[in-house]
Length: 412
Image (cartoon, rainbow, N blue to C red; front, side, top):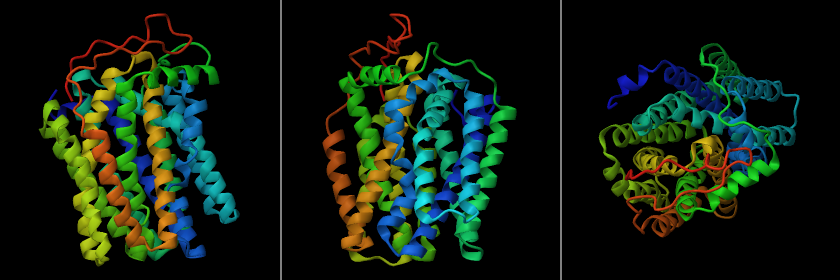
């Protein structure tokens, strides 16, 4: 399977693509609206960063306690229900009855449950596609996400300029309810991936299995840290660009879209592996120019060029999926997603705190330098051509050999 057209011929993937795209649009409008609302009321870059990515912060707690649920729920029911719950929460925020602290608290509560929904959705990509089509399908989803980020930021920016941040929240809620309907009415009703009772012990056992592998530990750090630091940089676009922040965010989304389209569609696994570190360096280095306080046009170009580097994540995702036992794939994808989200929130708060005592441009350039150092530390050592190890263990309810991964000699 070598073309996007062949991937889109798979009906269930089309449904997942459509619903995921709708949730991304809603999320972009939500984050932009909340960040603008908080910054307008407080003038604080730190609180704006918290509003921008604050819902990601509790995901580490959700990953430590809830992720065994991800493999034990029916995907269609879980995704439809959670999308509706999230949209209902946005309606509550948009009514204006909540003070700012309560809105931020509700954002944190939603973040606690988001890892489970993300884990189910990401694992479903593996279920609906042939193994050899995973990277191409993942790339296409990333292209869709990038495109919908553009739409979400563009629509959110228009609503923000013409109406208000509250209007952006109302629009996000409506799109969220639409995504819930797509999941409910169009997605195939699949059985849970694993059996047995979900519990805190089962979550911890699965997480211990993952972290027992040195290859997976390194992969997780590489998936979590460099890109999250740059997301922290992007959390400063509102304080740096003001009402024009939508242009910066849109440029970043376009760059990410083109990067995923190019690397996912026209490179081999071996080439993706070789490009991983250069792409992550590209993600960081252009932002060093912010030490010169570039104008909006130059800053927009920087965001566009740098975001091409997000495509470096594709080869790491491919390697990760090849190492994880199928019965715990949902939990494993949840660990990746929740770790990324939590690190993004922590990095946004870190960058916002630095901007609080310096200025947004200085915080952006400093974080870019840190990202270069972290990237070199994590990716300078070559990846082995084969995994060289097998995970042992798995969920307590799995049969003894259920957690053994399929042998893989895949490079990339």
